[in-house]
Image 1 (cartoon, helix red, strand yellow):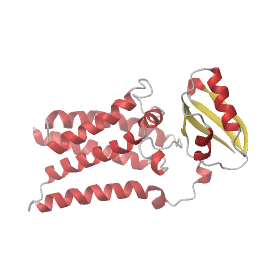
Image 2: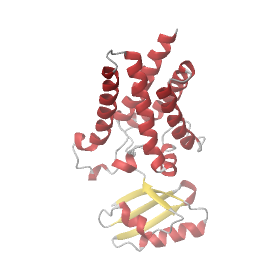
Image 3: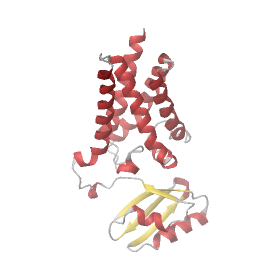
Image 4: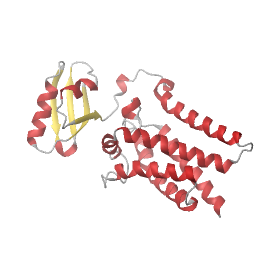
Length: 236
């Protein structure tokens, strides 16, 4: 079987050779081909080898992450696969509802603001766990990050800033407008990936929970677009 991985840190032909030699030393590896210009490594192996084994043999300069999801290995049910992200949404929804009921009155606008705050702060946290890997994965499908590599880093901090602004209710008009624009751009790459049936790991939660890009990502982005749009409409 042959798998492709993203490897960062390769800057020259010598780096390619070092990566190839290191990965070839793993038992079961048949052939390794590294391309520094694409941050791509193609590994042919006798049987599936866990990513951690490849990480253990690479020098600290290099970072290896999954590039594509191999559907032949996908043995989990839909619920097992997406259980982490579903739990995140249930937790955020439950906590924000409790906040409303604790005040004695349910206000839809306040609930949406708190929900968006929880959403952005939570998902920015997962991006910050390995910001470099997120940025590398994000540029595989996002329409802006493909052309401007630094956008992956900026996007993670933008989410964090939006989360804090929603929590503190700062500059409502501008924050809702920024959210609507940023998420509208973000959803384009997700829709293209899912529509073209590309099996790519989710940039945000993929490395943590081994999640593939799917309709769940589109729903997440779409929910933020709808909520920010409704909030903008209410301000007029």
